[in-house]
Image (cartoon, rainbow, N blue to C red; front, side, top):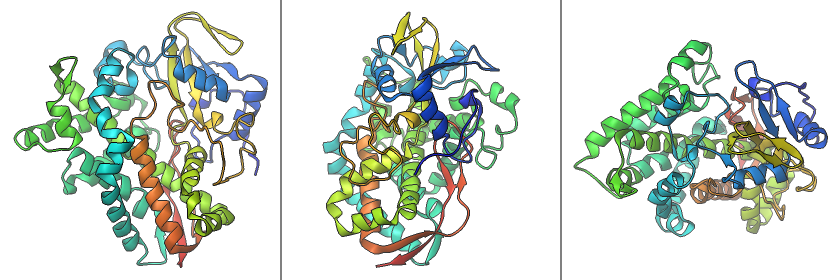
Length: 418
């Protein structure tokens, strides 16, 4: 399979990938101009980095490329607003190191295995059982959105009755240009500007902060083993977190613990439907589950890009970069780089090696929740392979209107069962 969608030489960040990721554009960019200067209508311009080796180099080189100066999204946010909404992903060492240390013990592979295997297995069995009660259903609504949201709710100690509300706020926050998910901002640039001090410049970010404040008040005398209790009682550089720091941790976890796993599950199911021979391979050989999940992650690439800002005059590949320049690193392009992945447009569940950058490509900002996300993917696809005979798409696929995240809003399917 080769890509056919071609974009002209313009700011990809100004376009929404509703019709799919523009892989043909990225293929051409890697060949012809892998570190390309892109003009912006609403900003100073940026370097678009599309080659795998360059994306990984920038990701890991935190000494020269900052996540804190300018933040990690393309939009230029006023420093005061950026500071107010600063999360773990928008910091550099030593603050990033201290923030990460606060939570990292709960997300190690050993801790995830000990605490979550049984819970996730029971959850997936229940979720699939309810979905499988009918031959046709929406995989996103009935499976991919359910599993990570329930896990997130347990992780944060959020009451069951509040989880749908948090999911809706997370959807709105991460997809501010999609009218289905974010009607308050998708058609109102002024509303985005007015909310620039909140996560993702979204009124949903404000609502999540307000929810976190109320949850903190309710939980003050009812602490547990959940991550929100850990944030309430833990220390950052020898002190308790401020209210705003707690709110920002909470907003990040709502998005990172829910949206990206849902996207990987959705795109994985779609890939198996479109490549039934690969689903048959997994059914016939369950030992392929580990490599299958890694291929799903490469194939899905839930986050299209992140931003960095150059701290000094430097180079990316052979291109000179000036201090203060904005840099966008395209994970979506890196994961289809033909110099790294043989036949990159083949969905191959036995692919080895598979050094994908779906979790960020290493360095200090590698996704902290990657072990938990992998567990959820492994259990879902293991059970699908064991219980399902065939997967067919049963209606229109609606994709998220976003160039930041690779989401599917609805994925109607018709399954036959083993």
